[in-house]
Length: 180
Image (cartoon, rainbow, N blue to C red):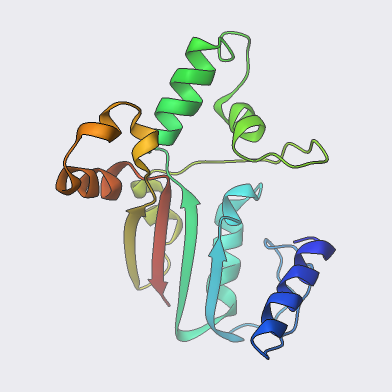
């Protein structure tokens, strides 16, 4: 989180007449007591932390018994990762041959910002995501977010039913819903 992100969140809640408490903290060392929250939601954050497993342990620690979390991580098995990051940028543009890692490539093309920052970016398989959340008693893994354009020319010709099946297997997001 940045101060600007917090301000945008405050403004968004104010539109609905709501408020909230905001803090810039370290996701791997949360400043909250054990069992403080019923729900922890993280959308596209934890795959940027150096110790994602440590951040997930913190989520588990601050959840109350029977509390629930919903977390989105980038999917290693996605069409976007293999088609755009690995094939197009890594192989065809030669970035892997020049010594760039897939994470470096993602930082340049997926996670960019106006200041030129290149954040840490990681991807996870469904199996790796399940392992990260293994301390939770219930874990549900879903794959989501695929657009037809990510399938290039195939996206224009495949039937909707097949597209929906692909969306659930090669989408860009791994969604983890877990209960403590």
